[in-house]
Length: 181
Image (cartoon, rainbow, N blue to C red; front, side, top):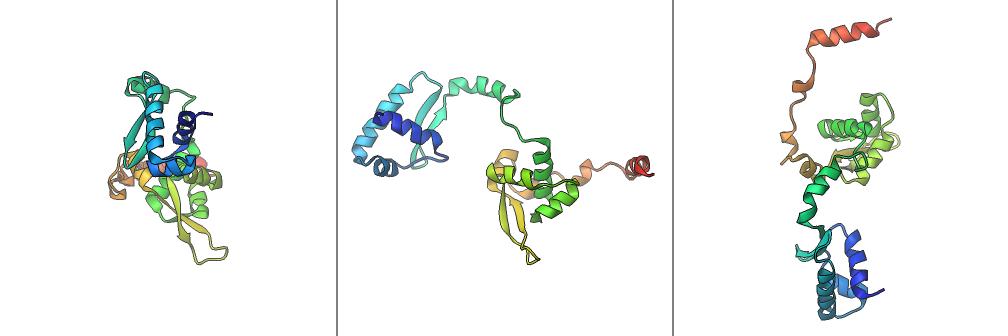
């Protein structure tokens, strides 16, 4: 495999810009040679769906701006990865009640929330904030900066008030009546 292909593979899996010095260390090549190979890769990617950019003190692959309209359309298809309803409900509970334990989330949802919490943590939307001083030392969760970024919020204070989404007391009472034996 040639060096530009190896660089492409590394940059494809990188979650943030990779410094050229790190690339040189991994490839066991001088920085000047890696810089030349990055130029070769950038040339290969001309008029393609990806482009190579030097940003934030490193190198990273980005989608071509020419593809944005198609990516927007793709994002609305069933194939595009979305959070499940269970994950969205769990995320809302964590956002509004953090720090919160798995058992607390499960109590609010009425079903076990372990899988949804793992999904949200894997996607970087929530993080373990610590442990409770209770038997078993359960983990407590809170949202991350990525959550704020994805939701377009500056801080948790920007979350809409829950009161705006709670039905009137008379509606709640009539719903409760339907569930009485």
